[in-house]
Amino acid sequence: MRKNLLLVAFLFTGFLMQAQDVTSGIRVAVNISNLDFEPHPNFDNTHRNGLAIGAFVDYAFSEKLSIMPELMYSAEGGKDEDLRANYIQLPITLRYHMGELSIGVGPQANLKIWDYEDGYKTFTFSGVAGLQYDVLENLFVDARFSYGFGNILDDNAANMEAKTSTIQIGVGLKI
Image (cartoon, rainbow, N blue to C red; front, side, top):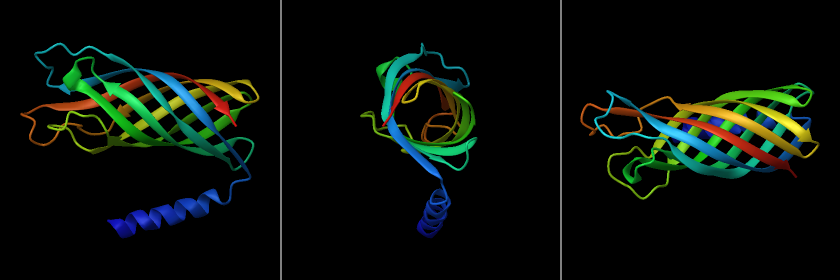
């Protein structure tokens, strides 16, 4: 497994070295998130409002195409204390630019960092898609949606699955 991850890291690094233009910056967002349970739970499962904050690097390959890895903290999950899910996330979006507007889509790795230890997986994957609008040369607003690919509950959870779903509304500063 380590060899495969190392190979992917080297290939990704080589791919990024071909970039023509590099922009970095910071981003802050408000999350509206929840856990989608299957089967439907017999307890109150309301959404949680949280914060996402992090840094990004945008590697442009042309005027229209770029790839943007980020490293973010994100407070997600449900409103109830036992349903909160805080993560360190690594979204990597392939972005298509149309003037001030860009569309991005890609995978996201999630590393659990919240206190509640029992019953949750440490590492999960999600898909993320979003729109970004450049208000000024170095200032943008964006909206994103991410959805978990797999169950975030440990295999010991009694016949129940939960997947995260999150809407983010954010603002970013290119440095």
